[in-house]
Image 1 (cartoon, rainbow, N blue to C red):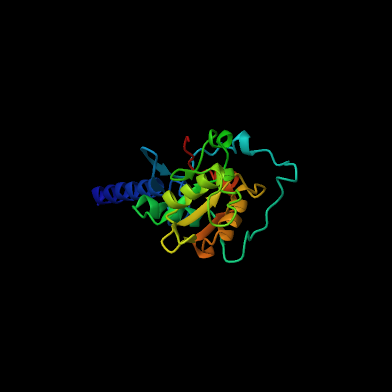
Image 2: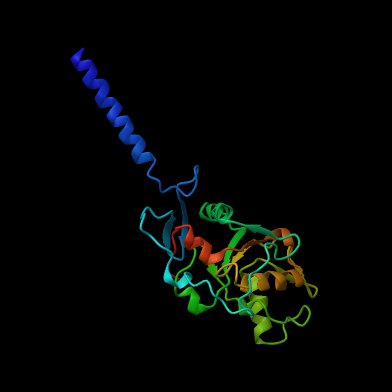
Length: 221
């Protein structure tokens, strides 16, 4: 009987220990522990920090922004474009990590901000390369030609009889620095004017500020 009680106590102890390890408190959500994505040449695991003393990086701690241009953005950037949060973005990153090439997560920020870290699995396309005047459907200068190249080579659109065809274009998830940053929203509006289907455009309004506030992994550019 004594040995039986010892065995039960040991088994119970191991079970509770296992539960403690399983419930480490670092899950992103109740059903999601981490997401793995390819970021450039490296495989990166996106997870939530387990450091209880972790704080928002100083880069994103500032909450006073001059408006304009850094005005608080509306929750809906354009009719038909879905505004998403962290879990939805992670869902798209999970698809990318599984080999889905129909989705592209776009970091719209400029190089000096990119140098401070980005969301793993995203591709940087600075906002000013997209929000340019295409003067109709044809590239008329170097900036418009650059945009045309991005539309074809990175987004999967093609030019047919002088018109952009987006039927096989990728679903784009765009973000910038935060709810006060207009860059990704302006890019979305430019793409809509060019004919990009709104259902293929997603907006992570919270951007980097919300991402780091949630304690999620960032990657070097």
